Image 1 (cartoon, rainbow, N blue to C red):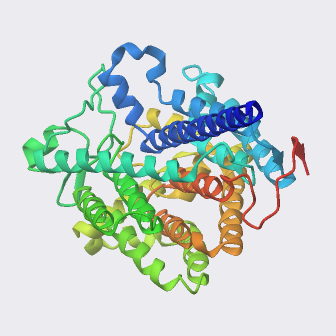
Image 2: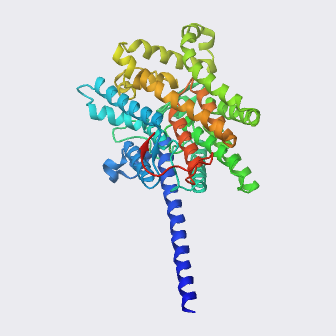
Image 3: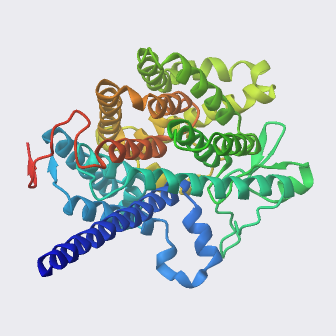
Length: 446
């Protein structure tokens, strides 16, 4: 009788330990996913800092990047960490590129530390994606990750739709000096601005942006929500339909044509690529090549006045003119060709209305051809590996391919890196490779 009581007590302890372990995994998953979502929202933490000014230094955007990086290292430390030689090389080269870009572009007003700090903040998700590639994620629970994404996106959707209907930002968007912390959220007749007078004087619409930096990023989150509810079959049909309607309305309220194009592109690619994954590969690589090819068309398009006078084409031509402006502004030499101009920092010192709305060129002007090659090689290899190993990832793969396509006229590399992290978490959250091979114990480079 005594032995039975001891056995039952031992089983009860093991059950409690198991429940505690599962709950810890869920909590870690929620925290990790929430930090990533705040990061890809770009300005959410800044807005939180405006709501709670007593946060002090913690309200800086780079705080989230550092928190994500530290939590990533903790997760890897709690798991079996074995880094492949190729991933290790890409990680070291990218870190080296960030350091050299910060050194070569530091000025009397921008020190090396501040230059590197901002560069690290901009490319931290890429670094995390490389670190997590092929690593055991047994400390994370994929269902908790999905649930966190849906709750976050739903709250953003409700806030964004309320902003669109009320024509009010609702959340603070001006810093202490009176400058807006968001991008062009006011829109009318093809023109946009982040100044409030633009709406009152020109009768502009307010784009839904939630607590992000723009209608574009807000729209990407809505698309992410659609991808998750399409993947997660456990959601009840009525709830799936309700969320799909909510996210679709959010996309409309973002008033961003490129997001609407991305939605249609994703739906088409999802259907045709379910049995033919070659369409995903073609779309992705066509998008990357076209990002470079737009340079060849720039002078031709800007010379076509009939397109410039059109609302639709005027927006595209404005982007191309921005590309040409920065191409002519920066003086090229070998160092800058290899390591870039750190445009993410130095663009604030350039007096122009233009920005670089092209993913490839945006990365190039930041960290040069070396950094660009590291990112493009890693993204392409991850896409091909994922499609080769497990076809059930075709929905997120389709989303990533569409992002490469809209990278012609925007810069979504940070969101592609985020999708890569989601790839890796879903593939290895049980601690086992999707092709069935256990990840060996110990930290090593092979």
